[in-house]
Length: 228
Image (cartoon, rainbow, N blue to C red; front, side):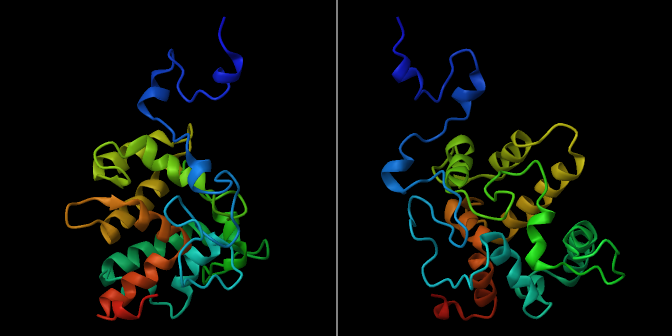
């Protein structure tokens, strides 16, 4: 007779091969307190249980912190090193897709602003669910990205693995979410891949709280030494 207590903790079902192919970590509690609990202002993982050291959250949610970098001087993408054409394309796509849902009124604006206080309303489907619906950060879901899909190098994604991950997290008939996810992760890969073409978990984690953008902007200015 099967031990029901042991069964309750299994993460692989023999007749569901996808659970074997995409394993999840079972030791998170040993390295990070309450990894399942959504964090409002910090983005911790097993290597950084307090989040990003020196990063000021200003009492913004983690999702708000992610987008706040681009609201400083209206030149965020340029500060990251993207050329004018790419910046223009992303501006049109991002503001066109996200402006209306964040507006504090039903009336559309011809200027397509994005209101950071309502950015959680712009969360789309077919994502990794590392942000919850209120813009908090769920550490366990970040860890699951890498335990499931980083099969070549632990805690790093190849482009092929990243593509597979964005395929695997798709929701049925969510065409907007499919495209948005590919574009977002593709842009992150271009921004943060290392010399071997790998995207590290640390870069992804810091993308979620926006501190990666601050670091990359200072690298572009040759001022990385000031990064906390």
